[in-house]
Length: 238
Ligand code: UDP
Image 1: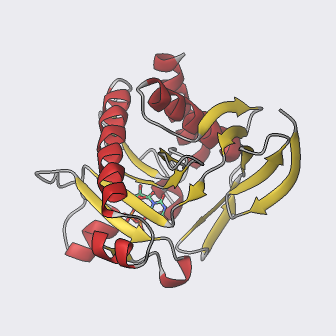
Image 2: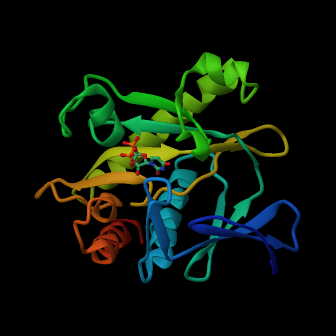
């Protein structure tokens, strides 16, 4: 597989064409941002670390028969991925109340709800990625009710796998964001990273935050904490 020209560059990733039409290389950058680009920084080695963590997690999900776009890691900061038609919604899965849910509903962070919560958001950063519901998604022509049902089913399976995996390394999966795409034959696949940039991960023993909240909330030791997550996962997966 030959990596060719840059197709797209976003705030945290670059997408490169390859000599195979149905694959791209996704490269993870050291750049990080929060609050819709108001807060920005470059964290040395973050690209490599989020790529490493996400590669381990997606490889694990593939092994558990969950369809993802991930094929293999390419170098330190890259992933070979299947080309998909990206669906412009985000599913946020919540096992513990935190972040925007705590703020929106006036709840304390750390409350454990009776059931898993699945939020659906429209991917429109100019509108602040607004919370929508299934009927909005269908009315906007983004996906069908059947695809929505499949997407929630996959999200629940991904959540179960993540909880089991992170439990082995002493980490609570508080919440995470995922996006999906369709392959050329219409199959729904997870088409996103799963790393401390997109998940809230709390150390079970100390309650310490091991995710992007360290950057968002100026808690320090961002890179060191991502390194710790990578090392713990490495110990159980490799
Ligand atoms: N998240 C993300 N990208 C987004 C929005 C949220 O990766 O554009 C992740 C975030 O890291 C957290 C979860 O989704 O793990 C829930 O985020 P929340 O809705 O609480 O928003 P936030 O607190 O980040 O504003």
